[in-house]
View (cartoon, rainbow, N blue to C red):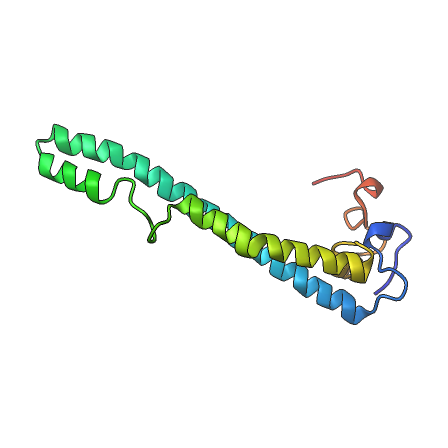
Length: 152
């Protein structure tokens, strides 16, 4: 790692006594949490898409009735409309259970590890990687937003 005069701010510098192995481990833990954030986003997408599909069934039922297919309209209405996606659960309940059982616990544990092992400094691994990959003196390779005013 090489340091530039416009290096990382204090919050993105490794605290005294924190080893490279610790920074790497916390980076891996944070990366796993970021993947969980993405998974949670997909879960919310599943929730919203399933809800949207359920509301779209209203139109399908109405159109089936309008087309003279009362029996099919009734089947769609009673068999699918408002149906649980897994036994006893609508999608909002799955999202709530995921948050309560897994997501919140993961976030708390990751935060506690960063607080205890790195004085609460986030993204140390990425900050060190950025510092190692920057080109000294290049206006688009500054360490901090306030050191470079040009974009694009």
